[in-house]
Image (cartoon, rainbow, N blue to C red; front, side):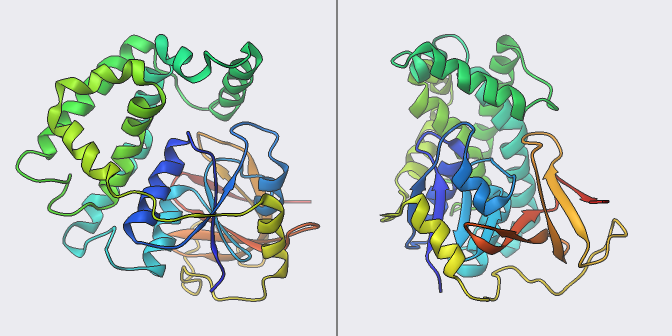
Length: 313
C-alpha cells in the first residue's frame, strides 16, 4: 500500500486531531508541512480547489475533511476502533458537535485578547493581518461569535464535557473514540497555542486530566516528505482500490455518475473542487480529476457539510 501522507502545519487544531488518531492506531505516516494561509499551490495540485487543513494522501487518493479522513483510517486499521459498535451513532454525533459548535466557540475565545499576542506577537504585523484576512474569506458564510459570547459558550461546553467524564476516563467510556479526538483538538489549541487564555480550563479539572490522557497518546513516529515528493507519488501511483467503498450509489441530487460536478464546503471553506463524479455513497463523494503535476487523482469528500452541484457548460 502507498504511504500515508498528511499535509498539515504544526498549529492546526484539526491536524492535531488526525495526528493523534494516527498515533492511536499506531500507523506509520509521512509529514508534509503546508502554509497556514493561501496561496497553497502544492495543496491545490492535489485537491483542485479544497484548501482546508489537513488533507490525507494515499497514493493518488486525496481525502478531505477530518471526518472523512478518520473514516478512511478506520477502514485501514479497524482496531483500536474510533466508532465502537455499542455507541457508533452517539460518537459520530458528539464528534460533529465538537468539530463545529465547540470548535467555533473555542477558536473565537482563544483568538481574542492576549491570545492574539500568543500567536502573532513575535511575528511582523503583516503575518497576523494575512491570517485574519485568510480566515475571514474562509468563514464568509458563518456567523461570528463576539469574545464575550465565545467565552460564555466555551465555559458551558467545558462543564458539559466534565459531566461526561464523571466516573469514566473518556467521554463515552473506558477507551477513547472519535468523540474524544474531535472534542480534544479545539481545547488543545487553547492550551498549547494560546497559553495565556488557558486559565479557562482550570475550572474543570476532570477535563484537564482527560486532556493529559489524550496528549499521552502521541503522534507515533512520522517521517518527513517534501511537497514535491508527495505530488510525484500521486503522479506515479497506479490504479488502486480506495479505502472507502465506492459501489453503493445514493443519488439524492439527480446527478448521475460520470457527470461533471463541483463540491465545496457549505459554510467554512467555500472553495470548490471540480471533477467527474465517480462515487456518491451514503457517506461520501469521490471526484476524478487530472492535474498537470499530480496526474489523475481521486478526491474524496464527506457528504455532511459539503454541497454537490452539477457543472453546466
